[in-house]
Image 1: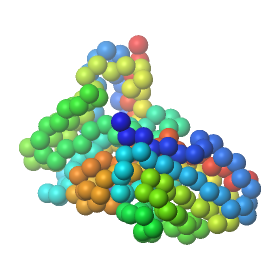
Image 2: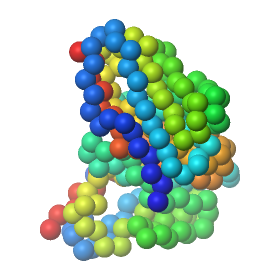
Image 3: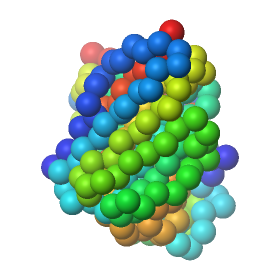
Image 4: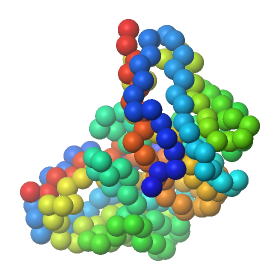
Amino acid sequence: DAKTTQPPSMDCAEGRAANLPCNHSTISGNEYVYWYRQIHSQGPQYIIHGLKNNETNEMASLIITEDRKSSTLILPHATLRDTAVYYCIVRPNQAGTALIFGKGTTLSVSS
Amino acid sequence: DVKVTQSSRYLVKRTGEKVFLECVQDMDHENMFWYRQDPGLGLRLIYFSYDVKMKEKGDIPEGYSVSREKKERFSLILESASTNQTSMYLCASTLHRGDQPQHFGDGTRLSIL
């Protein structure tokens, strides 16, 4: 079973920041938080991951609370192409471990 | 950028056929995975390989086999295709490190008639 809880859907206006929350209250000390997204009929796309520090890359920022029980993915300037299902996953720091996707959040970006 | 290429986006086969799905990655990754994705069931691991000629069963290996003769290529084989194997098949690869993300191909949507 997925170890994360996400809202089923969110809306965002184009050009605004999209903030996607994720609850992972049972996360263990060696588990990373990963974010992927999947556009209809395509494979999942890796976005970002982190252990306890906040992370930023060219796609997004990841904010992890100090107790690590929740996190937020931030898309700073959402575009129509960011419309997708976003998955928050916790995964141990162990090579070869499968990814377990929950139901994710369907983000709809509109103009 | 990491590139994981799956040989076909869409494939239609008949019951009883032997089906080969191919996956190639260009980043010298040690680990490669085959998943299937079905509505309401999420992503399920079929097989995993951590080196050439090495493989481990995932959660649903029945009816499938795999082959890894070269580091960059991981093949999924449906020995005798059945209608319940109609699904989206996803290949992924990663370095053999626990802190690295898996990168996915675009998937093969396989229909067994």
